Length: 317
Image 1: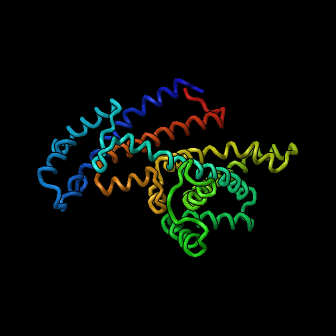
Image 2 (image 1 turned 60 degrees about the horizontal axis):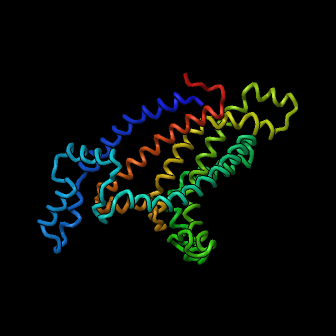
Image 3 (image 1 turned 180 degrees about the vertical axis):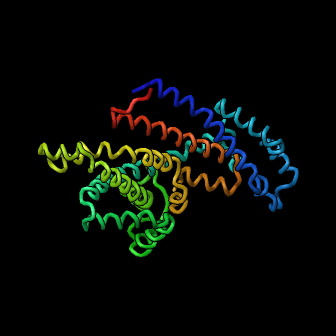
């Protein structure tokens, strides 16, 4: 692996992160409303108390001064304090990462293990009834809104059948393994279906492009079996176009499934983001959005490294 390339990519990501943070900070702080507006109609909160909050969090300063103060604190590892809870932002985020990693990691593992074989089967049996059935299921999975599917599953498995809890989270050490599995079953299903559908389509398209190459016909002419050619010769090259999509989806799932976590009351960072939006909690919002941006940049870097690992012909000069 070219270490110089990795180092240059990491250095090149620094101005991108700074630029992204400036845009995000401006969008959040120039949006209508603010943290103190949440308490404006509360008779127990005086105007003097609101001014003290604005002064404590630097909200009475010009926006460029607020950004400079926030960015300087971030460089020192200080994420600030939540306006809504008063707790350190870093502590709030770290506590929510565990449930999100649990949900996102299991969803990604299931998605990868199903999308790859489904894409290969669809390409190997192009225009067959099996391929048409997989295509119909894929487009259905992509088209169904996440919130609608989540509510439908809750209605069917929780209310009608009574098999699964409608919402909630069982942490490690709380309850049995069966309880934890019952709580995570529907959120993982919702989070995985759309990903499986889209990834299998990208894998199928990549496989169809590769299967018409000359070296595939040569492999068949040498007497190799169909699945030997598909797995050992076609799949590796077919994965190249799909790597970027998978890497970006990987970052988005890990950084928080906002709708899924909200519908199922899953205490991850996606739900924390919604709670912070409702409370105009600027420090938490900036911490989450900057973390999400860095996850996307890291995912792009990982995609480039996977390119080189899959195809040794790729070189970085």
